[in-house]
Amino acid sequence: MIEISNLVVDFGGGPVLDGVEFYVPEGKTAAIMGKNGCGKSVLLKTIIGLITPTSGNIFIRGVSPEVMRKKQEITVEMGYVFQRGGLFDSLSVYENVAFPLRRKKIPEHEIERTVADVLARVGLSGSENKFPAELSGGMQKRVGLARAVCTNPSVVLYDDPTAGLDPVLSDSIAELMLLLRESYRVTSLVVTHELKVAEKIADQVLLIYKGKLVFSGSAKDFFTRSSEYARQFCEGDIEGPMDIF
Ligand SMILES: Nc1ncnc2c1ncn2[C@@H]1O[C@H](COP(=O)(O)OP(=O)(O)OP(=O)(O)O)[C@@H](O)[C@H]1O
Ligand SMILES: [Mg+2]
Image (cartoon, rainbow, N blue to C red):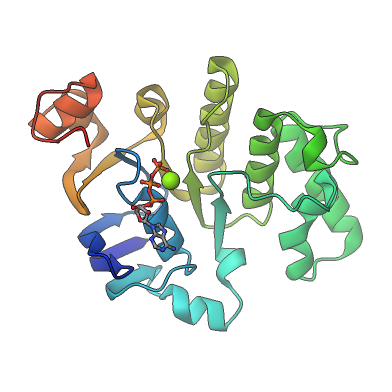
């Protein structure tokens, strides 16, 4: 479903991603982990076509993001939850969620129904007319999630969807991601720093260090610390193969 081969992204100061390769089968979830600044957001942005790779290939169901963008299919096929919410400040909650649906030219009454449904699923019924500035950080995150999934995309890319949320809300977002996977066979990549979230939702784990994947395998192997990299990361250990800085 998501197939990445030999991906290199270099902004001019040396590679941020250096030969990244992995495959995520349909309906599965991969957690992407790694230290701050290791290239997780760059990886997601490259997959959705916001960054052009220096070299390498990306295929989503056999189609490259470039081709999807030309056909204006990218926002339909893929949902994206931005690390900082990425909401339009001047649009209400309702209009933010309706945005990708309008691009699909869906009739208004159907948009109304879909927005109401998805807002109910993220626990935000009644907030339709609020603006992002009036919402707490956690509420903004949930609006971003609602917007990413409302078109029923086959792939959803989540960039740190639970960052800054309290533990209960964080768990409810993880539950929501599980529900989407079960109900719609969504294939997803989830960048997260939260081991608990990753353990709950991930089938496989990708650990990035210095632009390379230093662990790529099943979640089970990762969480049973089957490699020194996995062990160091899970335990937050200063000692290990990865430098702190
Ligand atoms: N558009 C860009 N132009 C130049 N450099 C960039 C660009 N975007 C990201 N970078 C650099 O790429 C590296 C990886 O950034 P990225 O945002 O992917 O980190 P991250 O793994 O998501 O970190 P965090 O956990 O803090 O969110 C950083 O050194 C960053 O400065
Ligand atoms: Mg990031």
